[in-house]
Length: 203
Image 1 (cartoon, rainbow, N blue to C red):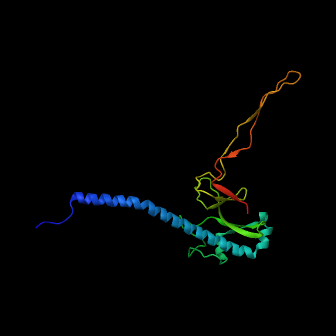
Image 2: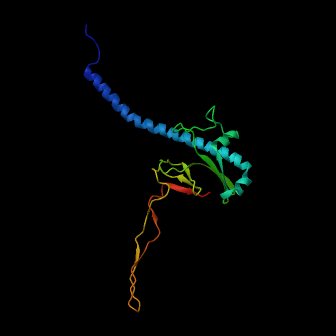
């Protein structure tokens, strides 16, 4: 009686085909998974900002009178207020859908004079050693400036890299007694070379 089954060659062909299909599908799956996590992150940040606005609307005068017309609200304060629900049963914290770690930032609410209203931005302290993604907001603690990431930025890209324009040279001059002055080099203002990564949020 003949035994039916796959030969070794046939098995190898099937394995090669399956491996090829998996290699094609994995990048697409990872891309979709990353997009889902980013969308979940943005949704969560939007919820946090809305919770801060609800509190700040009741304190609008104090926001206007605060230094720089801005007030900060921590994650735990927002949770304690009841406007935001904690992701943990034991701690007042919000978990990032991206790295599954508690969010370390805060919400800065500022009174915008041009719009005559308040606006909220969830920010994290800028870390020059960290990679940022489009849509994330950071604050520079020393200046209080808030920046929006316009395009995925590798570490150290908060400020634009600058190059000097060509120097302007003034010719040497000789006065009536024969003394000469040395040429003077005057540099123009710096020109940004990578300002596409971050944009300052002024209101």
